[in-house]
Length: 311
Ligand code: C5P
Image (cartoon, rainbow, N blue to C red; front, side, top):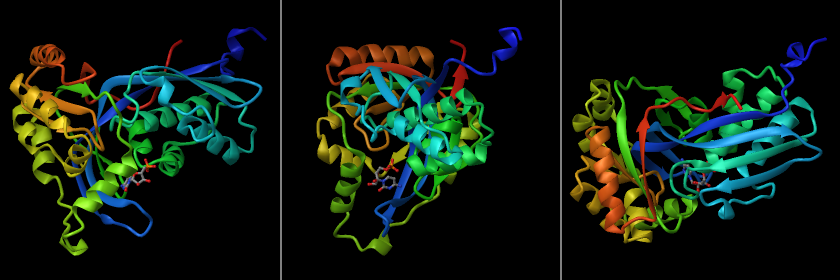
């Protein structure tokens, strides 16, 4: 048999996975299982981690790049858990090396860990040539974390439940974002706990999870000026309470010419929606000079979810 005909059995598979931003995040009361019901609008952005999976004698994970030192290398690593979960389902030993190249900030509210889990999931399914359809992959993803199904699917989507139930949203055009990365990360559970603490005076039944109808209509227009005033994040007050300096970052982005700025998910990354690509480049330059962020990036969305790329 020629080498070419064996090419279905890969030596390594590399998957590119996007970061996410929540354009809208309405958080309901704390549930008995420790989660909160959400109504959220996700958008996948052109800031990617790369996850390479290859055969090995045992499961191991290495991480390089942005914030790599803070990513655990043991079996609590979400990418490793993704491979272990798939291996258990198909009755194989998880003999896979996972090499993650990070660009998505760690503990930044942009679902970097979830992206790596989605990347490892798609990677091992392709490496082993498994017959797992999209629904089965989404179900495994939801078991790994609330944001993992979105990292698989990408685009712009409405998330309900704890964020894992997805419905695609029609979003016209391309949106241009500036991201201000913080010096220190925030733990997602800690931010949700802080929200519960800030809300403790309100009775649980007062907390409404409003549907993002106005935002969804605005997204079909493709006009960032219509979308910008409708950005909302219920976790923002909690993130600002834990990192008060983020107020200055948010102000600096708007002063620099962004249409609006919010904390991304549980933070501390601040994201700014801009009128177009050149406005985003200008805002990024001004923010870099203002000294209010560890690093500043530009990105656009929506982009597709986890995809195998050529080596
Ligand atoms: O699902 P995931 O493991 O990413 O969630 C991390 C933590 O974030 C949860 O343990 C919980 O404290 C909090 N969370 C929440 N409600 C959600 C999603 C996450 O309270 N809908």
